[in-house]
Image (cartoon, rainbow, N blue to C red; front, top):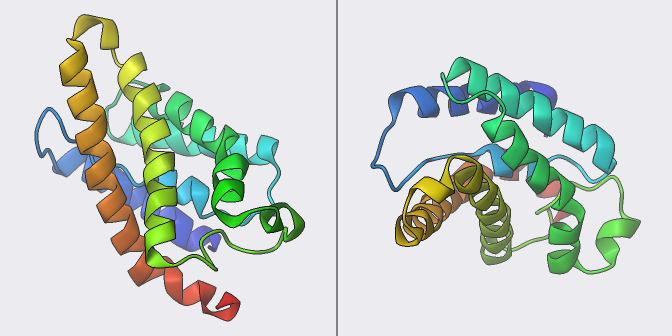
Length: 169
């Protein structure tokens, strides 16, 4: 994924955050997809810096709680290599120049995006005041947001990012 496409998708996330409100249970967020789609040649520390800056910028431009998306995205960035490695095996650590999901089927990429989104929303909902809401509300919010964001992430990946990964098929 190139930097311009990454920036455009960050702007799209800001537009989604400002203009689309589905319900109190559902948040649409493509940030976990953006972090998971960064090529594997990035080590964990630069990836976490990118995640922090991206999350902070999205929070700033969407009038969110500053640092909330950053903290949730940091956890996703920290666990990116184990997530990709789980679905791609030991080869993920050997091929540093490949784009994640390049060799995945739609189903595997959907599950990988779902795991990244689940981690993101667990941290996000917990930091957003999980102690003030009932457990069922938080669980419903995490599950509904993960499902909606995974669906949106797979659509975005297949239509926007998949064409740049064709050389790996």
